[in-house]
Amino acid sequence: MTQYEIVVGLETHIQLNTETKIFCSCKADSWGAEPNTNICPVCSGLPGVLPVLNAEAVQKAALLAAAMHAEINPISYFDRKNYFYPDLPKGYQITQFDEPIGKGGYLDVHMPDGSTRRVHIHKLHLEEDAGKTKIEAGRRLVDFNRCGVPLVEMVTEPELHSGEEAAQYLTELRQLLRWIGVSEADMERGHLRCDANVSIREAGSTVLNTKTEIKNMNSIESIRQAITLEAQRQIAAVEAGERVESYTLDWDADTGTLRKMRSKETEADYRYFREPDLLPVKLSEEEIKYIKSIFVEPGEVTPPQPSHDLKSKDISFGVSISKPTLTQIESPYNRKMRFIAEYQLSTYDADILTSERSLSDYFEEAVRLSSAAPKTVSNWMMNDLLRLMNDLGKSASELRLRPTDLAEIIGLVESGKISPATGKALLKKVEESGQKPAEIVAAEGLGLIGDEDALRSQIAAVLSESPNEVASFRAGKESLLGWFVGQVMRRTGGKADPKRTRELLLEMLKK
Ligand SMILES: [Zn+2]
Image (cartoon, rainbow, N blue to C red; front, side):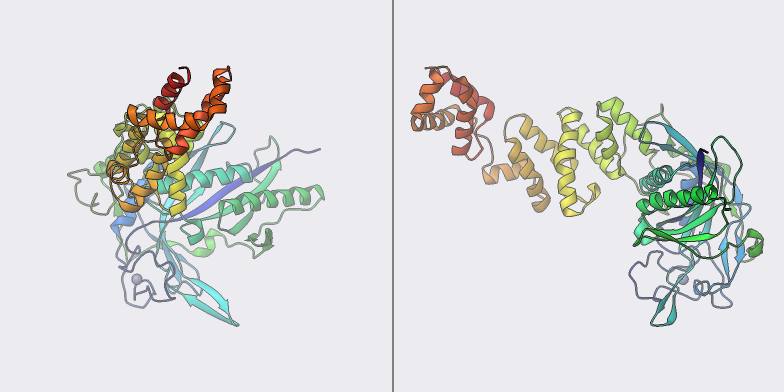
């Protein structure tokens, strides 16, 4: 039986989270807005208007290029891609063709089996988004709100070999985009879109056979399923003696099926030419060096810094960079490996704690402020803080409970001033009230009873209520000790210091 290899290349469109659109001052993000309310003469393509390039879009694209290890082009150009579509009012799209902002580059994808696959990208370019159309009550409606939203397009080489690998690539790309702060990368909102080119070949062969293109996959799960399904279909077709034809397939997430759409245009059909209304984008050697220096390579790790989002004022292009204000960014993978080495975290814990940059910053800050072991801080975050964040639908940076509060709560528990259960409850109380943990403990009398006389009288009361158990214990049934501790806890509403209680119980029972 013939063995087949699946060959997948991904074409991703990333919506940059800039303030405004790429060539006008309309808001870039108009999710949920009424159709055609976030437009102006520039982005709706009225005659006689001129585009003005948004510097923030260039900065974020360059930052992404550096994060993807791409070569940043000192001079890049915008081009017109000519085609007609109802949601493209100008009749052309402004994009970058042969001299894009980034060339080459790669993303290392870490597979669940521990292997790493380096996936190269051909280029990275800036372009404007088009609008969208929909059919309603037999009429075709067009919404230009998305026209002019800044996008970065990245196309991978055909170096992925399963739906699983493609899904992992997207997962790590999404994490990177959020981590470096260039995109919200929310697939459901279209911030991160992906088309897949799929073909098959005999295992061991290096030829590239006819491919099909899958569109409209708006979740990572869809990508995994659609590619797997399409590869199976191609293998079945070839096994049945048929040929794979080149066409575009539409993924229907509701039914989990692929539908044939149309045959694909070739690049020659677009009649690219230089955009005459825009100047070339020039980046000086100093600027390029600076952008590249933002990323920390393994072995040159700097002390952790609080998250710092890229703002347009931080670097300005076309003028010299006099005061670099961006903090260095450690990649998610490097930070994960450092957490494992430096804090002795398990791979599982390190994976989760570095899933978002703000969460990993939170952890490091709490570790720095806490006298407890990093593993203890990790346990509190993994077990309790993440649950709280999940319940509230908040990210780490949105919590009122700051790392200093978490460190304080852990300290109160570790020093025996409050019980672990009280500590857990405190997380929520601090989050809700914004008060300091120690203030709440004092105000609500949550502190443990460590005072010897107070404890002795509670224990004495328990012992006099339970003469049979006391007799059994004294007759040798020492396993009853835990039961006595439980009784004291119940009497004191969980506020007895458990360690001291055990000691005093042993002493008083043995009399
Ligand atoms: Zn506009």
